[in-house]
Image (cartoon, rainbow, N blue to C red; front, top):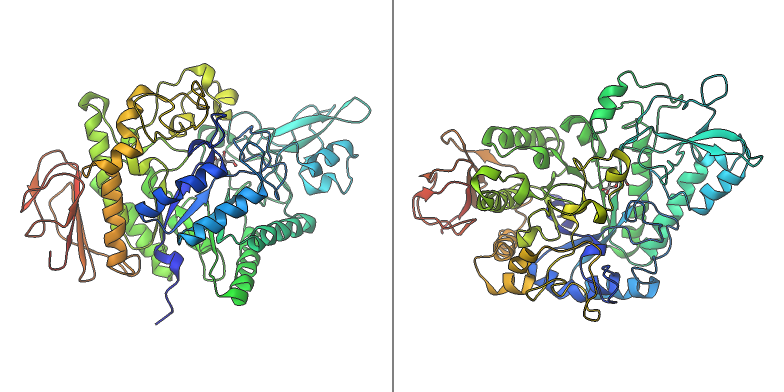
Length: 539
Ligand code: NOJ
């Protein structure tokens, strides 16, 4: 039997640094704030944290536009503060993952500035995708690709002589030029960046847009540009999921192994992988590639037993079936929070909250690893009524529509008290969080959640404790049990049965006896609607 690898069943907590805890009083969370919050995370019982990007950045996409990959933006602290954070986390047994952004940088990155100043065809431009435009005067973009955040994927530059010149490619905003990974200088630079942070003691990286990096070498037109424009998914087969990207992950894995060989600590690479099928997804987690890749299909599934069963079965067959581990996720900083996503306006807010708790218990019972997004453990809903003038998401700016905006899941966390800033910022009175917190956040404050044993926080904490007590629950497989329609139940070895009632009326429980853990009150022999429960051997 293989030695157990910690990451295979790890539960990692995503810290959106800007919105976690502000130690300086400027209304923006920072690394010292994360350090102050570590005891809270230790109590919750997570294995590690993933820090959203804190590098120097003009913040056009909240740090996913990196101007310097080897430093900390002064808004978030400095390298000394970073070192203190890693040391404190390690003392508490919490591993630290950084968010690395290799598909694109900031238009303020020195190499991009050099590229703008250099001539067409220069080595400086060859680090990015510069191309001549189409049409007689080159005034049309080089191809018909759309950017993920709206508008064309190309922007035209002004050359040194003041005339309109070449175009550069950006799959997100114009402030995020895409790197050209066919240029070995780019690969070498990222090799050095990885080592810079590994030398500072980090435990791994969450890799942004990990199915990106390479584009079709000829940058041809997309056959169905309308489909690409309609969806934010990586459907343009010429811009995403090119086979060459796997060589990069093999190399990065080898770098991690090199560090492990030195000190015995296993590092973790987790990719943000959006690809069309679980089978394609599985390629990213081959034994010599990424350790984990977020499996977003669970997050994308509607609240429906058949939909959940389908995505879970596919993941178990196509991903876990190859010997790797599935990485489950229900929330992150780009998605409407589960409480709101699963809610039905006509039925009041309680339904979404109950379903979100049930989904969490289901996720924690599945074999594999799981990620929790900050505030999920508090049962925070999406803030849906932020006024237009406070929105910062570039998607809003570029599409003019609120439909896909992400500010609502990024509102700073409530920690204590009855009024904003709810302990989020330690600044003088009147300090304002960078996004306004609604009054009802008082109900969700961490102090309140810790004191109330019926809170979502306690459900997550108990689920995590039981998960680790059942040792390696993340390993192995699951066996579906027969149930009535609208109910899912599965067994994990001899240890655990998990059942979820997706309907609203109670059903007979699939297992006799009182569950050891449930997402809502349960009577023996009955599983209420919108509820999940765990029966543990002998309970
Ligand atoms: C995915 C990140 O999660 C998202 O927040 C970001 O805007 C895009 N990648 C671009 O970096």
